[in-house]
Length: 154
Image 1 (cartoon, rainbow, N blue to C red):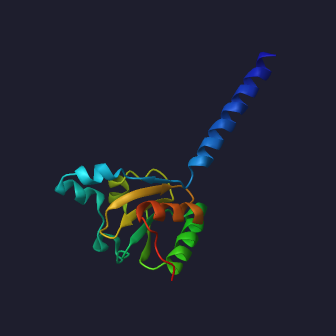
Image 2 (cartoon, rainbow, N blue to C red):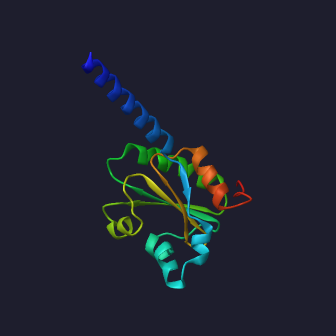
Image 3 (cartoon, one colour):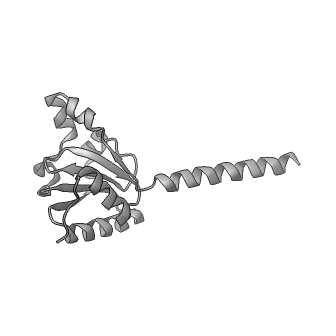
Protein backbone atom coordinates (compact mmCIF):
# COMPACT_ATOMS: atom_id res chain seq x y z
CA UNK A 1 0.00 0.00 0.00
CA UNK A 2 2.77 2.59 0.78
CA UNK A 3 4.28 1.94 -2.66
CA UNK A 4 1.00 2.75 -4.38
CA UNK A 5 0.71 6.01 -2.46
CA UNK A 6 4.28 6.89 -3.40
CA UNK A 7 3.65 6.15 -7.10
CA UNK A 8 0.45 8.23 -7.08
CA UNK A 9 2.25 11.13 -5.34
CA UNK A 10 5.11 11.06 -7.86
CA UNK A 11 2.66 10.98 -10.79
CA UNK A 12 0.67 13.87 -9.32
CA UNK A 13 3.82 15.94 -8.80
CA UNK A 14 5.04 15.20 -12.34
CA UNK A 15 1.65 16.21 -13.76
CA UNK A 16 1.62 19.50 -11.85
CA UNK A 17 5.18 20.30 -12.95
CA UNK A 18 4.38 19.42 -16.57
CA UNK A 19 1.30 21.65 -16.61
CA UNK A 20 3.26 24.51 -15.04
CA UNK A 21 6.04 24.13 -17.63
CA UNK A 22 3.53 24.04 -20.49
CA UNK A 23 1.72 27.14 -19.23
CA UNK A 24 4.98 29.14 -19.10
CA UNK A 25 6.27 27.98 -22.48
CA UNK A 26 6.41 30.87 -24.96
CA UNK A 27 4.82 33.43 -22.64
CA UNK A 28 5.98 37.02 -22.84
CA UNK A 29 7.63 38.60 -19.82
CA UNK A 30 7.95 42.37 -20.07
CA UNK A 31 10.78 44.36 -18.57
CA UNK A 32 9.35 46.70 -15.94
CA UNK A 33 9.09 50.18 -17.54
CA UNK A 34 10.04 51.80 -14.22
CA UNK A 35 13.25 49.77 -14.28
CA UNK A 36 14.03 50.97 -17.81
CA UNK A 37 13.31 54.60 -16.90
CA UNK A 38 15.38 54.53 -13.71
CA UNK A 39 18.41 52.77 -15.23
CA UNK A 40 21.57 54.89 -15.41
CA UNK A 41 22.81 55.90 -18.86
CA UNK A 42 25.70 53.41 -18.84
CA UNK A 43 23.38 50.56 -17.77
CA UNK A 44 21.24 51.14 -20.87
CA UNK A 45 24.07 49.70 -22.94
CA UNK A 46 23.69 46.40 -21.07
CA UNK A 47 20.05 46.14 -22.10
CA UNK A 48 20.48 47.45 -25.65
CA UNK A 49 21.49 45.70 -28.86
CA UNK A 50 22.67 47.57 -31.93
CA UNK A 51 22.31 46.67 -35.58
CA UNK A 52 26.07 46.05 -35.66
CA UNK A 53 25.83 43.53 -32.80
CA UNK A 54 22.91 41.78 -34.48
CA UNK A 55 24.37 41.85 -37.97
CA UNK A 56 21.01 43.08 -39.27
CA UNK A 57 19.01 46.31 -39.15
CA UNK A 58 16.61 46.96 -36.29
CA UNK A 59 12.91 47.12 -37.05
CA UNK A 60 11.35 50.58 -37.14
CA UNK A 61 8.91 49.52 -34.40
CA UNK A 62 10.23 46.27 -32.88
CA UNK A 63 12.77 43.50 -33.41
CA UNK A 64 12.53 39.86 -32.40
CA UNK A 65 15.97 38.45 -31.56
CA UNK A 66 15.66 34.67 -31.42
CA UNK A 67 18.42 32.63 -29.78
CA UNK A 68 18.40 29.12 -31.24
CA UNK A 69 20.47 25.98 -31.40
CA UNK A 70 21.06 23.62 -34.29
CA UNK A 71 19.18 20.63 -32.84
CA UNK A 72 16.16 22.51 -31.51
CA UNK A 73 12.81 21.56 -33.07
CA UNK A 74 10.82 24.30 -31.25
CA UNK A 75 13.37 26.81 -32.64
CA UNK A 76 12.31 25.99 -36.21
CA UNK A 77 8.64 26.40 -35.34
CA UNK A 78 9.29 29.70 -33.55
CA UNK A 79 11.34 30.92 -36.52
CA UNK A 80 8.45 30.16 -38.89
CA UNK A 81 5.92 31.97 -36.67
CA UNK A 82 8.09 35.08 -36.28
CA UNK A 83 9.12 35.17 -39.96
CA UNK A 84 5.47 35.06 -41.01
CA UNK A 85 4.54 37.79 -38.53
CA UNK A 86 7.36 40.02 -39.79
CA UNK A 87 6.21 39.53 -43.39
CA UNK A 88 2.66 40.57 -42.43
CA UNK A 89 3.45 43.61 -40.26
CA UNK A 90 5.30 46.81 -41.07
CA UNK A 91 8.21 47.95 -38.97
CA UNK A 92 9.15 44.53 -37.58
CA UNK A 93 12.40 42.66 -37.90
CA UNK A 94 13.42 39.11 -36.94
CA UNK A 95 17.01 38.06 -36.32
CA UNK A 96 17.95 34.50 -35.44
CA UNK A 97 21.22 33.97 -33.57
CA UNK A 98 22.95 30.66 -32.89
CA UNK A 99 23.76 30.34 -29.18
CA UNK A 100 27.08 28.64 -29.94
CA UNK A 101 28.27 31.56 -32.07
CA UNK A 102 27.05 34.28 -29.68
CA UNK A 103 28.05 33.07 -26.22
CA UNK A 104 28.78 36.64 -25.09
CA UNK A 105 25.15 37.63 -25.68
CA UNK A 106 23.88 34.38 -24.17
CA UNK A 107 25.74 35.16 -20.95
CA UNK A 108 24.85 38.86 -21.01
CA UNK A 109 21.10 38.21 -21.29
CA UNK A 110 20.98 35.03 -19.19
CA UNK A 111 19.72 32.75 -21.96
CA UNK A 112 19.09 29.38 -20.30
CA UNK A 113 17.15 27.54 -23.02
CA UNK A 114 16.38 27.62 -26.70
CA UNK A 115 14.46 29.13 -28.18
CA UNK A 116 14.54 32.34 -26.19
CA UNK A 117 13.35 35.44 -28.01
CA UNK A 118 14.19 38.95 -26.86
CA UNK A 119 11.85 41.72 -27.97
CA UNK A 120 13.59 45.01 -28.70
CA UNK A 121 11.99 48.39 -29.19
CA UNK A 122 12.91 50.66 -32.11
CA UNK A 123 16.03 51.85 -30.25
CA UNK A 124 17.28 48.31 -29.60
CA UNK A 125 16.39 48.29 -25.88
CA UNK A 126 15.24 44.91 -24.59
CA UNK A 127 11.64 45.40 -23.47
CA UNK A 128 10.76 41.74 -22.88
CA UNK A 129 11.48 38.10 -23.58
CA UNK A 130 9.76 34.85 -24.46
CA UNK A 131 11.29 31.50 -23.47
CA UNK A 132 10.34 28.29 -25.18
CA UNK A 133 8.30 27.69 -28.30
CA UNK A 134 6.36 30.79 -29.29
CA UNK A 135 3.10 30.69 -31.16
CA UNK A 136 1.41 33.50 -33.08
CA UNK A 137 -0.89 34.38 -30.19
CA UNK A 138 2.03 34.90 -27.79
CA UNK A 139 4.04 36.90 -30.32
CA UNK A 140 1.08 39.22 -31.03
CA UNK A 141 0.45 39.67 -27.30
CA UNK A 142 4.11 40.59 -26.84
CA UNK A 143 3.89 43.17 -29.62
CA UNK A 144 0.72 44.65 -28.17
CA UNK A 145 2.30 44.89 -24.73
CA UNK A 146 5.51 46.50 -26.00
CA UNK A 147 4.07 48.63 -28.82
CA UNK A 148 0.81 50.15 -27.54
CA UNK A 149 -1.52 50.75 -30.43
CA UNK A 150 -0.15 47.68 -32.19
CA UNK A 151 1.94 47.24 -35.27
CA UNK A 152 0.01 47.77 -38.49
CA UNK A 153 -0.40 44.94 -40.97
CA UNK A 154 1.18 45.22 -44.41
